[in-house]
Length: 538
Image (cartoon, rainbow, N blue to C red):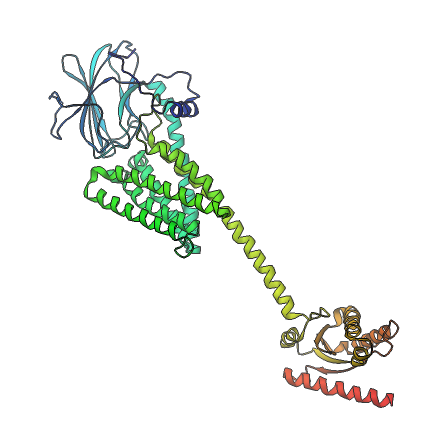
């Protein structure tokens, strides 16, 4: 077996969280063969060569990057085993080179890689390199050069068979999470194109920047697309932080006029992010540090804004608060740069990707609720519009279509249609004798009975006062309409309105193509009928 020469002490930081991650991701594994190399780190110049013995010792590589060498002694006891050497905590490595030599200093094997290296990775999305060595003691010398690190990289070894199993869970997290992010980026991108709202535009940009960052940090972009630009790690996050603050501000409807303090806080945060951006431009070693502080600032602003708006009773803020709290808790681990004790194949980058994925999924619920609210508001508006149209087109007393509705119907009246104008008799008599409530009852009875009897023969309208009108699609119904009017009056005379009467006159559309002339003609015939009725009564 492979044995470290000395045993180092283990830090207890984040022990509980590390155990949870260990159980969640590695529970299917029955044994844990991974073990960290114990050795010494050195800082060297960029011109360092393997033949040189480094002298400047350091505890760990600096997160702001540089050129480092790690040395450790290990032993092979089993002639049939193949080992894999990889790095724990983080996959963000610019360039690395493993040298394995015997105790006399003779080079036995070597391998190199990294995000900036064009060499093919043996394992997809992993820096692992295979070595098959005869039994004996060996010295590992690992050269590491990177502009910056997300977390302190530590070389470790694993048996090939176990390594293949152990890396599957990290691969699942990476591929599933990136798949979710890409799918939702397309969805929000379509919404952004259709709705042209800042909320969807900024959130689409936030997701895309995280896809680029995580795709590069977790080696998807270098392995699949042969893109090795190291600053895709960190750089996109500087932009995504700004986009997310704008997203949170617009999602929570924070405006200068309504929430001046939160609005000014957002402006201050954006100013700080701009400063961090320019610091990163002029000092590339600080890119990931600026991105790290930017993420913390972004999450803090979103949390403060969500709490403030939730206290105001804004419903969207309640749902968003759940998303941002989850994001804040998981994201805080991702930006801590701590050593993940006991965890080898799950990186800080996986935790960060998981934080973004959880946040994006929860934001989907938030925006889904927002869309539902918009739909419900639209439905309420449509109901109000329909009610307004009902009021605008119908008479309040009788419920019949009114003069405005009559004008609209006359515009659509066919060439074979007919208009009948009606004028009730003795309405004033009932108003003066029994009161207006009796006159209203008379009008309501007339409207109800006549409208029901008309059925498909025509539509009854109330023009105002004691004036009514019937529109019919065919003048062939003239006799039917006259009969129905007569039946209605007879019914009213038998049910409390003995002196009820009505005068009417009809005009066919073929007689007058002009609507106004059609109305005048029907009116003239109405008064002719009224005069005949009066003459007959006399």
